[in-house]
Length: 551
Image (cartoon, rainbow, N blue to C red; front, side):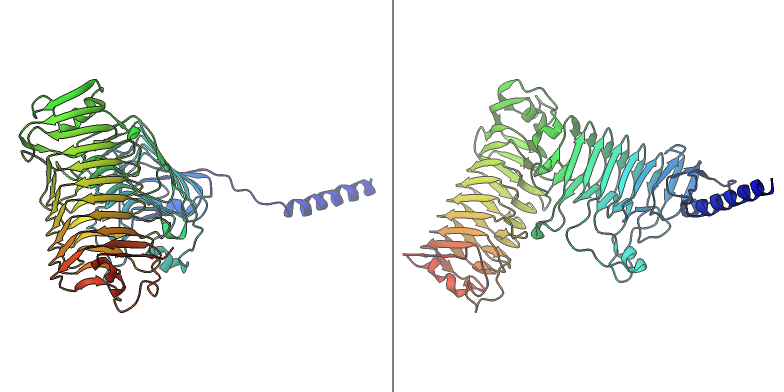
């Protein structure tokens, strides 16, 4: 009997030792926040919660700047009754990340009540309703993101204040890929973007995005390093009355997809490298020809949507509002050249996206320093003839692989006359490019992985601003291409033609210019900084011409 007792005691001891080596599991639970609860502040409950727990927030106004750095559900009783306003004027209301965590946010309103400012050093711009960084995977459901700088900001890079407070270094490629899903959420009246989605994976569904400066901005971080992981799906949303674009993407065409978005009243519904299928047409396409008087359709966009592919819209004399997105092959022409003016309704006048092939004849696109006259993206195409593009921030801004031909037209009094980025191309003949405040034509090859290109012949480039007539920049490793023949460069404030524009004593080889410049028989007169920069471009002034290729 005594032996049996010893065996029992020994077994119990061994079991106790064994259990002491097992991991300790703490049960996930719900922590409730309210004025009479155990937790009076949301952040206090977040800090106390075990990973996988739920923080349930009852009705009230909470002035806090929150951070979540663990697996968690943050749930409000009702977004109309649970409101969180930022306590700090240089930080987002809610910051999630940068660790590999899974977070759900449901039923709250996030609004920046403090005056949106930067610090004294002017370096913080983390002023969003919700900011997501690093490898965080976040689902946002039935929330409201209102009256912030950005409603939602997703970026692999953590904000500066976090790096400084944590001692974390600025990460290098390859970057992590944050992921976000937004459903049944209102994103409105934010002073910058409703949503800024940088190098992330995103799904946006059944949400209201309105009254922002721009609705949704999609961008690749560090394109020039070849690093990108963008995959955004946008469907079944109402995207309306944003001052700028409803959806704009500088990412690679194919990184953005979706359908059935109701879009109206934006500066332009779609801009950049996006498919036209994103937006739901305002009218069924049934017309082979439309005579547009401004009375038979509520807006020019309604007429564009009602036109069948390859249809013709003839505009009678008048002054009309634009802000249109073109997604098909279409001709828009004035009944009488010079008697039709189209102005921006709020942002850009015309946006050409994937699927568009526009012929524009006899139309004046005029603004008073606002958005773009024509913004081209994706593989959009356009033929512009006998038209005037004047008074815009940029006469034509082209990205993606867009292609534009301009003949016998006038591009004047814009800030930029033309600006080309990524792999876009413009072919110009018998056109006047004059009195643009900054530059006539600029080829801006930021990524080094793509190259914009220009052909210009028998045109006049005159009295443009400090960057001159034509500028290919940056010089270092640029792959921009230009063919320049038979043009007049007269009285530009910068150089007539420049590569870089800062090291004119160096040759193109010394500048490591990897693009192409060729041409002949150009005339230069009275350009304030000089005819060409560097001087090795002087073959542009000769009859026989020449060519430099750094490839």
